[in-house]
Length: 617
Figure 1 (cartoon, helix red, strand yellow):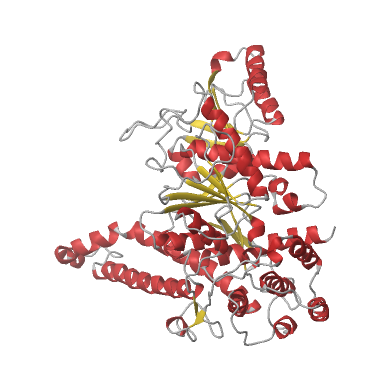
Figure 2 (spheres, helix red, strand yellow):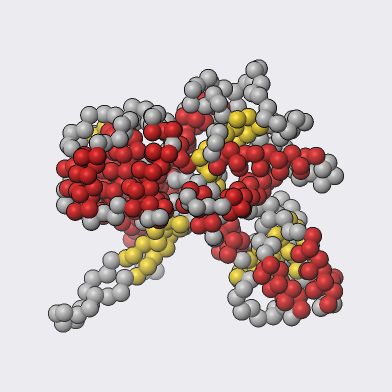
């Protein structure tokens, strides 16, 4: 697309054609996690501007547009044509554009005498955001329109529900067009996930039936990662597991998302700044904000994002020590060779040290990049550690794991809620909701009143609990709560290496908890369906094959072999805890490939806010 919709020629040494990229907020969110400014520049993008910003004419430069085909976007593009802003126009729509809107553009081009300047018009089918090679979400702009709250509102009308489902299906359809594969669809009955499945099956079916315009024939088919076997799409409803999104976590990426401002692979940190050197009573300096991109190019992040936090702290420390050793070597070589001074003595030593220095100099860019990553992760991990220590998140994580695995608790829940030193009111609310959701039997009215009083005394807003009570009474899960297996976090005593006085991280009092791999409900459902296991949890899941001629609910073929590739999609929102659990599940199974998708990605704070809004009605 950025190469004027022509595949780039490999080993081509030609300079890229300079161009401008015009996107809307949707396009910006899609491109942002995939390409850095430097990578855009390497592709010839000199300027990238928002469609609705004030843009000056650049009449001798081609423009690549990447936008949603909305009414206001089309109007603005027509205005650009009339104002003759650019030399030529390459129009790329994130979702398919309707014929009437296409005609509006054609009329504007005719009126502006710019028909020859509209070089290409493409439907890109890219209405989803890719955060990782194996993770995507639907949208970030207007995400409240398809949020858990929007789907779960008691006063939602059928028309509103249809609109939400159509929005989700449009994005999933784009995803499979990009993948170049028609999935086998499985979903639970009587849920929003089932509504998505029915509509997606219909949309894929209609596209396949129109052989002339089908998006799943010819070049695209087999071009995706899944060329040998059709993938399985498992559509699950957020309501099958409301405890995991509230859970305090212990792995690096999920912790960063839980406690910091982490959004579309970028983390924003407030840098602590001391008082000005000025008289007593002076106002503290304004905090500086610093942004870091945590991407696939960051080797440390790729290696450790799924690791328990203590391991991350230890690894940052080791990287720092190894960097210091290398840095000293470069300094030593420089001083041996008298690089600072150009004296004759240094020349005679060249023969011995040239090879060493050459290797040191050639590794300098690598060394500087290593230093940048160490600084980045020292800052991020320190910010996470401050939250862990201030809120005793290790204690919460361990306690919740015990609740979810029905293990013996070493401290009463009431004591945890009443402890003024452990956690924020929100942490206490999350803990209690996990207990309430996971318990086979709801607490008695007397006990519940006691808990509610303790929560109110701790400063908690009880609105989320009101909703969870209604939800638990309404769902069948009240009789059979989701089982979380017998996962427990094992403390390994306190830290060894990172407790050294020379360490960047002062970890006193933080538990060194090690995770025992255990499948969460979403992973367990996927495992049953991928391996074709018979299990009461998934036996009544519906089966759709859009390639089958019969449109009705097909039955599961008896001779079906297990799937190698699958996409798990959570309707109602997902989180990094489930994503990491699926990554860990796949690691132990050679040849299996699993992608995780969700209608929106929220952390516990954002989720509890939605529960709170639902509980206020």
